[in-house]
Amino acid sequence: MSEAQAPTQTQIPVTVLTGYLGSGKTTLLNRILSENHGRRYAVIVNEFGEIGIDNDLIVESDEEIYEMNNGCVCCTVRGDLVRVVEGLMRRPGRFDAILVETTGLADPAPVAQTFFMDEDVRAKTRLDAVVALVDAKHLPLRLKDSKEAEDQIAFADVVVLNKTDLVTPEELAQVEATVRAINPSARIHRTERSGVNLTEVLDRGAFDLKRVLDSDPHFLDSDDQHDHDGHHGHHDHAHASPIHDVSVKSVSLRGGEMDPKKFFPWIEKITQMEGPNILRLKGVIALKDDPDRYVLQGVHMIIEGDHQRPWKADEKHESRLVFIGRDLDEDRLRKSFEACQAA
Image (cartoon, rainbow, N blue to C red):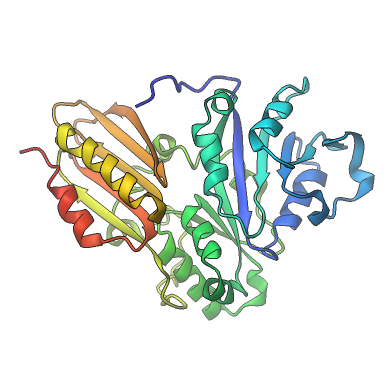
């Protein structure tokens, strides 16, 4: 689909940080802007007012960009995210990574789409991970009254399950089971007071499916095979039942080699028709007469894919596709996917 994406030295990793009001985002952002971690981050926030940044930390300001005494900078989005990013990229003392905070209510998809798709932004940055902070104590309530809380989890590559000190082990197991039910492939970190190691959330390469598959070839396998081998920070008691029925679910499809003449029109049609309901889509496809694995991923209606690497001699040429979304007709997806297989 798009060839010109060889990562260059100049591409700066971007982390999209999402999470409901009160989930601990401000605590995490303040740590980045004040701790002596030896890296330089640019933090883009929606509204400065929400973040209690201590004025003592600010060295100088040129209107929208504030420099911190640990070398990080902070700026606000008052309009166009693309413009802010371009402004940051023009600064001479570049930084190691950019963190974009979405408002507590926001759906992370449009922010991710900007970095996933905008050509200019993409030449200089690469979407590294979508990180969702979840308040372990209040998640059950959040899910009852807000579809955004569910979307944020569904969309995430990394989930920081925060405030674990405020719940019992049983409650924690249930919350974790609920997160898993919504998003089986996210990596989960349990924390108190946003005390996650910054290296676990920044520069993870978690959005880059090719990189994820290289480090964990079974990443897309159906849950029963792979759920308890520790790859995703699982804990033994994650067998608890979810807190309540969630409307977001994942559908995992697997099949043999696909006929490209059937598969590509099919995936195109599915994403156009079901796009609003598909939050994330990830897959590794074996195409007939193609020696390479084809990796595919999408956000709503935007989808892209390219060849990852040749199939290894001992690998079964198998196609796997995972949809995470709402109101997905699993039966229809499965049948129509299987109908794309090469004769």
